Length: 171
Image 1 (cartoon, rainbow, N blue to C red):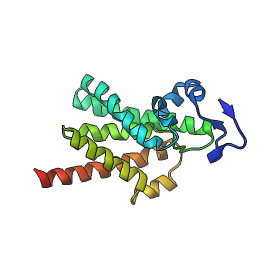
Image 2 (tube, rainbow, N blue to C red):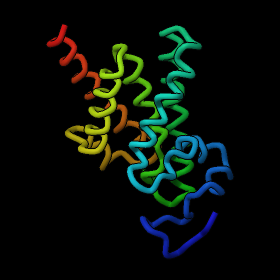
Image 3 (spheres, rainbow, N blue to C red):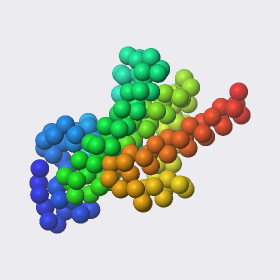
């Protein structure tokens, strides 16, 4: 890890592979490395949710999987808070565990078919980037790990609502 006084975004530590491998929380909060992508780390973090979902979801029953997601959300509050403190920036863009957990929730409720998955991805990214109310409020006013995790959970809610509306029109 490189410590820099002149770091962009007010970072006290420059994130890289050395930083990610220095603590398991950093590796996970950076989405196993997907958050290191310089352009659109949230998009790459969301993409990382696909293989993780395909790997983990079949292991559990539906109820068990939802419990696992709730636990990973709560765990995410802690790991994102810890990594943010180590970086010196609470909600650094490379912290993408929030996208991964929230999008795995979206994938759980997404109907089968690549077109549904694509629609879910586009909607989730739209709501996560645009942050319509009340997402913008919580993103601006809730800080620390809970703030990092919660705004993406709201984006997942908007995504699922839109998916349900599209599905009700089509079926």
